[in-house]
Each structure stands twice: as structure tokens, then as C-alpha cells.
Image 1 (cartoon, rainbow, N blue to C red):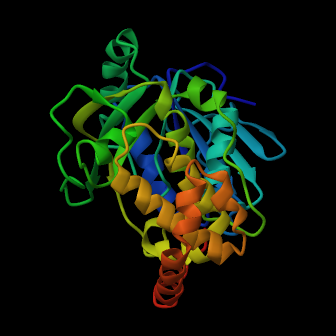
Image 2: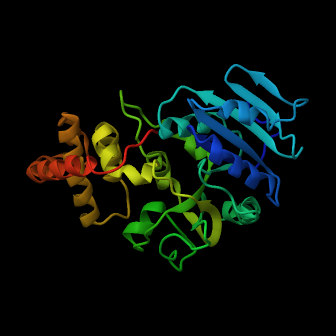
Length: 321
């Protein structure tokens, strides 16, 4: 099942027990000044009444419900195509995998359930995309904003385009940003792997897999309002290191294959790889990375880091992703 008419853009929203915040996102998509998009909601096994609330947003005459899917148009805006999909809880990265599988559009952007689009967010993306495509760019990187209107992070570099990894390594940009990507490229790489019992695998893994295909237009415009939650992924990084060590090993191994990275960056990832491998009780990860000798030599330092990570994980708040 997919949106009835193929849109240029898919706005996908992974959600888990966030029905109270999801309504704000729905209101935001209704206010969009450009309508060439589909809203894809991936429900990662919510135990609240997310499905019932989302169902109430559909126009009953258009709604088609089959198993875990509901498709149709909004009762509040006949132009708004919506697709709801329920899946067994597996973590945010599995929501990305399912969204990539289902989307049928040229480009896509993730708007988390606790965040929302500015009223002209879709219009900005669709206005910029034709020129991006003509230049061979693979997407757009725009800005995230706090709810009070402050921009998140440092300014983007004064260049037209860059790879994601270039932003931090070459231009020293810091802070979250909104990434619009070509859907076909995400579909062309393997889905993000899952490890038993681990649900905190950062979806940046999928995004970095396509970094090798090209660069993104850098756009100093607001594409998303961000409402950081105490139970969100960003707030619980040390617990994630402990609860999902194999996932972080896989992510560190990927980081070590990327272009535009400095040796300082490589050594930092090697150290974190050693720490995560120790926490996972699986040192075979060290032999799988691009620099196995350095990885094994880093074990004493990785052990010290693993002790620090375990200690810090006991002082941060819990998460339920």
C-alpha cells in the first residue's frame, strides 16, 4: 500500500507512544503552503491510542484500512495524502527502514513525532529541489530551530554544497540539522541492521551510507521546529552505548570508511569502537573495521572509556525507544 498519487516529497514520521505530540505535527502539515507531498506515519508499536487518533484524521470516504495500514486523505484537507503503518516495536532505526520501504516519491524528509514543519517547510524544499537535481546534488541540508525561534547549532559553511561528514570534519559545523534525501538512494543501500535486544541504533547510519553518492545543497532556512524530549534519543546517549553496543560498533565501523575525515576523527571512532566492543563482549568487531591493528592497540584505552560509559549511564534518565 502507498499514497494513491505519487508525490514529489514524502514527509515521514516515526512515532512511539507520542500521540499527544503527534497532533501538533498533524496541524503543521495541514498548514503547509505547498501540497505536493504525502505524510507517512510509522507507528513503532505504540501502546497508547495512536492508531485510533490517527484514524480519526482520515476522511472516512477515502480511507482504506488493510491490516497494519491505513491510507487515504485527511478529513480536514482533501489534498493531504496520508499513510499510517503499524509495526512491531523495534526502535527508531526500524521505523526508518519501514518508511524507506514504503515511500514512493522522489525525495523524503523525516520529521520526528515531537517536532513539526514550519508552514512553508514543504514549499522551501520543493522550490529548491529542481535546481538541486539539475546540479546532480542528492538532497538538501537545512536548519533545525528551537520552538522559541532560535536556530540550533553553528551557521552552515559559506559554500553551496557539502557531504554530511564534511560539515563536521572539514567545516567544523555542530548541531542538529534537517536532511532531505533522494528516496531512490536510500532504497539502493541495505536496510539498517538490527541486533537482538538492541533498539537504540541511530538512523544516521542509513544517512551516512548514501553520503558517498554526492553532496547536498546547504540552505540557511528553517525546515523544522525541534522539541527535544527528556525521553528522546539525544538525551540518553550513555544508556544507549550500554544498551545497544553492537549497534554502535556497526556505526563506528561505518564512520571509519567515510571520506573527508581527519585522523583525529578516525582515532576517536576507533576508541569508541573498542569501548563498545568491550561492552558487547565481542572483540571480533575490531577485526571487522578498516583499521584492525589500531583497533586492537586501542583496547586498554577502550577499556577505560567503557568504565566511564557504564558509570555515566547510571546517572542519566531512562529511555523507551
